[in-house]
Image 1 (cartoon, rainbow, N blue to C red):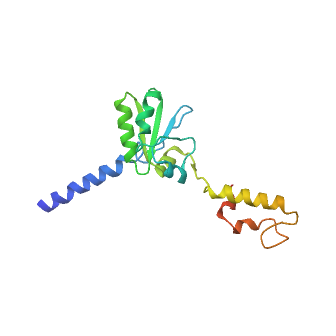
Image 2: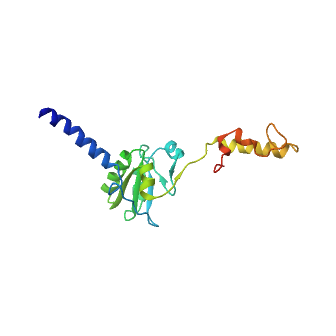
Image 3: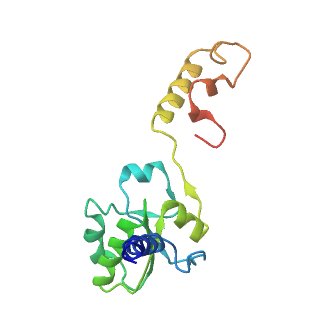
Length: 169
């Protein structure tokens, strides 16, 4: 009996921990209206790796959420996410203590995307712009230049960098 009791406490804690990061209703979608504010409370580095389309970055660890609270509309609807739901939960609690009534922790970036139906925006690495600019300049300054390693191909730049894959700039 004692062993069963010892094992049941961690199981209950784990169950509550997992459901705390899930969107409301567990499997349901969260409505995103025209005036819904989506807050990404991760770091700028996490933001650069991908964020929800239309989200606003407020780095919780840097104190950006606490600093922004006086300027945010307490009557607006807020959806807050982070990497795991932990910082989003802390941001939600902070906002609720400040009088915000409609704040939802939608968990991680992936669960927020699933719950809202919004796409994740992934930015190309900063080096892509540098490589693209260098190639453009080289092709403009070299009249016979049509590519790297060949005079007939206009699309060899994809071998230089993943920046030139379809959908990347």
